[in-house]
Length: 278
Length: 108
View (spheres, rainbow over the protein chains, first blue to last red):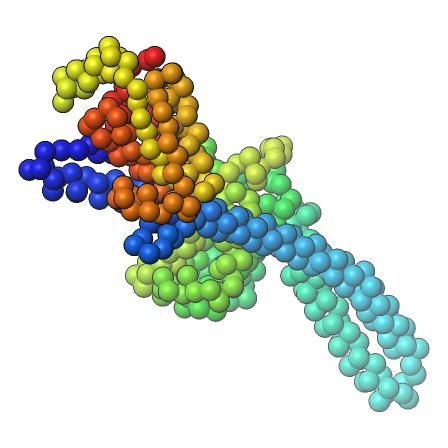
């Protein structure tokens, strides 16, 4: 905004006009730029709105895909457990029956049955593990806190990396889909720790605060570069971020060589805790 | 500055001068439409019956824009009373616009 000034204030006026022009452009209040020969219509506001809408659509799509994937996993896990698991158990029982019917003179056959029985036992265990990985039944049975405790224990057992879990939300009742999301974030983070961090120690904390539920996973490994965090092909990280955002939360990942890696997810309590169990 | 504004407000109120505005817009683009609506509202609220608005669509009349040194739209020029005032943007910030047009506190 400016007014005509005496000539000696011309420079001041021009500067003020330039500031106003800059302000109008920066705040996207300009529709067209009038040039010597052409008039250029600029739709910055609309472009930004379109971009925002596209982002929201992508977010919604990502949330839908995550949810669809979880449902699909649950179906496959159930099929594996019910169909394949049952068939293998029948096979195992059948082999045991044959073994009992064999006479001492049928030693080669006995050896073969024993070998097949061992393979069947191993297959039953594998099916159970795969089903559990696809849909951790323990999450439905025991709840999020106990599942995370168990996950930490199993992680330590598999990798040898010391893993501790602490929480102040042991009595909280979690929304089912939020619990799955948190569990998957922890699972993916621990996989990254095992694969990339070169850590000897990991800590998982699920802390309930006034402003939200805060999940942190830390390790004492080599850290993570900013470039890697923002790389588009870091699908694991993108997946974790999308899970947090789908719950109205925030996701941050930071790390340096001296401090290891710190993952922090903060989710509004209203989206994740639905009550308190006794 | 304050004294000058008081003086100007007093003048505008006492003489009931007609305010002549020229608003440069780009068709029905979003900011231009907002500027049009905001200017009409401001005039209704603060200058009822004492204003004249001349809308110039630069997409139809680029020469007028060049002649008035208009470089972007929307641009509002207070032609009269002097001194001339130029306001850029959609005029959404009523407080700033009223201050620039020397209409602060001059309620009808």
